[in-house]
Amino acid sequence: MVWPSHGSNPQYLYEAMGLSLPEHYHDFSANINPLGPPPALKEKWQELYQEIFTYPDPFATKLKKRIENQEQIPGHSILIGNGGAELITLVARMLAGKKVLLVQPTFSEYEKACRANKCEVLYHQLSEPHFELKLDELRAKLVYADAIFLCNPNNPTGIQYSSSTIISLIEACEKENCLVILDEAFFDFLLEYDSFIPYINRFPNLLIIRSMTKMYSIPGIRLGYLVAQPAIVSELSELQSHWSTNTIALLAGELCLQNESFIKETQYFISNERNRLFHFFKQQKYISSFSKVNFYLLQDPLLENQFPLFKFLLDHGIVPRHTMNFLGLEGRWLRFAIKGVEENNHLMEVLTIWRHHH
Image (cartoon, rainbow, N blue to C red; front, side):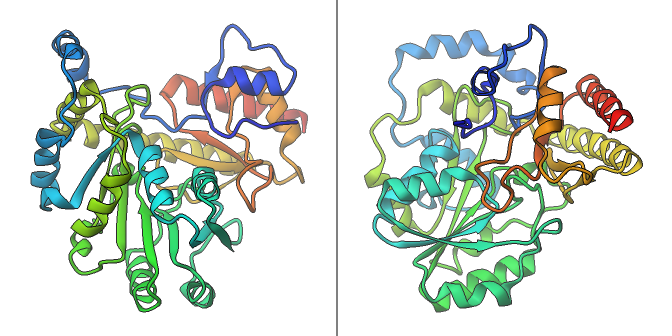
């Protein structure tokens, strides 16, 4: 069976499973902010529409300026992209033919993009259920790598690695002449977060990728940015196709970044719902990953493979994310996004039914 390689678009998952898509379902497979986009986007939608007749600014000057002010970093250290996915693709293109180390389990797109660019892919596997990042175990592999991809907080586990571990990793990589691509697609869901952006000046081997589609719930628009020293940004921008980021995305990005209270509201909502869900899982004897963000891994420890639970949930209109293409998970876990209160309640109801029968 061919498993869909991403969450969202549940029709492909049901099709692969030989099931028909129910009329009503809750999609827990895409890690998007359950509060939806910031209200300002809807209020100004008509104004955005007027701009579809205008070519995008190829230098994304206004959006860059906003990120510059917010992150206290010069514009020539910022590259705006068509979502995190485009930025990952550009980095992989820059690394064509090189040796790339992936800390698994992780986002499958890194490997796909690297293989498309004839990179040699090496793996470092973290052990479940704690998925701890131990630098001593990783250090020996850095000798062979030209670059390492690290997703923090991690997708699919939701685990946040300590700042000291990451800084030590960047230092160890600098000694080995190895680039660190730090993917922070979910950083803004963290209640406690130390920014690594100030370290850009200190480490020429550090690249940070940030997605704006997750927090601001705009995956249909596609927007993200990369921060690195100017020489790397310049090299990547040479590889980028012209007009890669559209006018609406650039303007939406400006609007979104004005909404700091929206981020706080999201963080507290997610934190409360996560605590409520995790309390329930513990009571019902499910195991979850120690997530600090808006998604988590879950397993029924009574099952070797989670497939029966996966099918049961699909039959009940709940769409989790399978983990068949996450190296080191291979179906032993399911990933769920934290959704709205009602959807989370529904998930708990269905998991209660499962537990009573199994």
